[in-house]
Every structure is written in C-alpha cells, then in structure tokens.
Picture 1: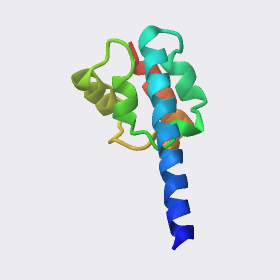
Picture 2 (picture 1 turned 135 degrees about the vertical axis):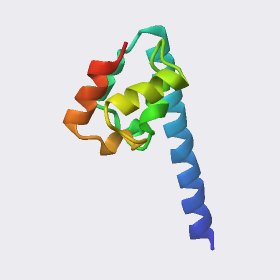
Picture 3 (picture 1 turned 90 degrees about the vertical axis):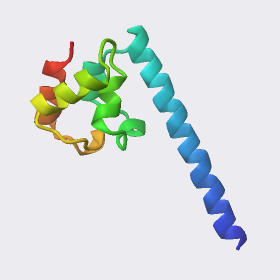
Picture 4 (picture 1 turned 180 degrees about the vertical axis):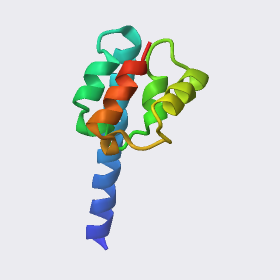
Length: 97
C-alpha cells in the first residue's frame, strides 16, 4: 500500500511542477518575454498535454473568441499541443496576431 501512496505523491508533485511551468510560460507570453511562435516551433515537454485553445488564450490580445476563430481557421478542434504536427503548428503561428 505504501508503494501506491508513494506513486500518488510523485504524480501529484509532477502535476504541480507542470502546472507551475505552464503558469510561468503563460506569464512570459503575456509580458512579451517569450513569443508564442517560438514556443510552438519547439514546444517544451510541459505543454505537450496543454490544449491548443488554452495555449492560444495565453497569447497577448487573444481571448476566447479570437482563440476560437484562429482554431477554426487553422482547422483544429482542441487537440493537445504535443499532438499537433509541424504544418498545423505553422498554420497556428501564421494566424497569431
């Protein structure tokens, strides 16, 4: 039983690390320290499971409506960033403000 509890604690710790890394990345994108296009060209492992629309909403001047519009124009539903191919990531980049 202790092994299961240890695994659960490790999973919780890893999840918190990923959330913290995503929060920092979103903040860096909002402040302009990091460009969304650069992140999409080589996404870090911490955002591979982030949904595309969540990522788009972290881009400055992009809210829910504009994120939905970009997603429609790029022909995506709401996949995870890690599942996007290079061509799809490029389409998203081209549509960013």
